[in-house]
Length: 91
Image (cartoon, rainbow, N blue to C red):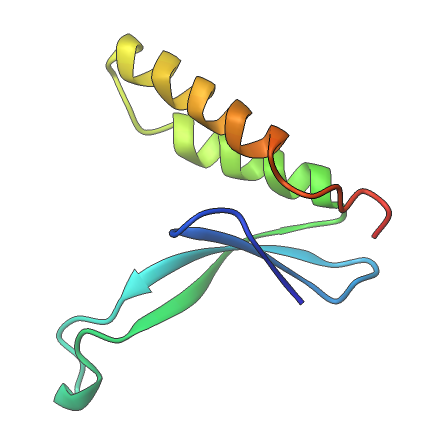
């Protein structure tokens, strides 16, 4: 089962013990040109709980910038995003 976070992130789970953070990537420069432009989900982290997967997403999103204004806005955006997700803590 996939839990959609936003357009670029999702958490895949077997519903029990495994939570995989995935990022959407667009295929470019494929050996098979017919696949160029297709999207795929790439595993970027493995976690024991839903909550730790969300923390992994936050760490990945805020690790990029050098600009403090961007960081503050990104943290606010992520907090809002997480607060509006359905509660999957019972998984």
